[in-house]
Amino acid sequence: MVTIELVLNNTALMKLYERWFCERPARLDAVKVVRYFRCASQAEFAGFHRTPRHTKLIDLQQTEDQLLAGFRGNTRYEINRAGREGISATVGTDMDQFRSFYDQFCKIKNRPPSTLRGMTGYWPHLVVTIAGHRGEPLVMHSYLADPQTGRACFLHSASHYRAAEDAAVRNLAGRANRYLHFQDMLLLKRRGFAIYDLGGYAVQSTDPELLKINQFKDSFGGDLIAESDYESLPIYLLRRTKSFFGIG
Image (tube, rainbow, N blue to C red):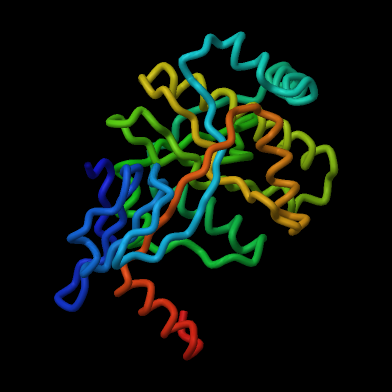
């Protein structure tokens, strides 16, 4: 069963499909240019290259108090303090505003920016949220939200506080980030979503940056699960060929 399907490249030469939250890849898709993300299956399938993935899921059917109780003590403190400091949480509806904010974050982090085609393809399925202070956005999040499965997957996180010279501003934005995660859970819960996906978890990693991200995600609790991403062999071989020749 296909839940969310995106067509990110639709030309006479090639269509690139992305499918999310399926049980397993469809056998007939082996000859297409298609990627599957967050599949429940952990099996190997002919015609597909499998990549093991892990993530942490939080049950949004809990009460607000139960959600908070699952957080680490310092995280609860940071969330409560952010509320006292006047951090606000709102829903973003302007794709250009979000893309501009996110691309500035990518510049700070020396990452590739978004593409208009990719963002336009994802936008109808995204829930975007903003943490602000005194009218200025500090942090933005996005979630790929699937009403069919009741799952909302944390996809983008952007903030500019790492470029701030003032340590107080950086600390405030860090608290705003935690505050926004909690408000996002409550928003998605109100909208009928049952599963909050923290967007991946680097199991057995020794990378200090990834371990730091794991610790941040651990501070919200949740259950660690194993899943799979799949690529059909046409796109897997195409990507490897481009990489071999230094393209993309």
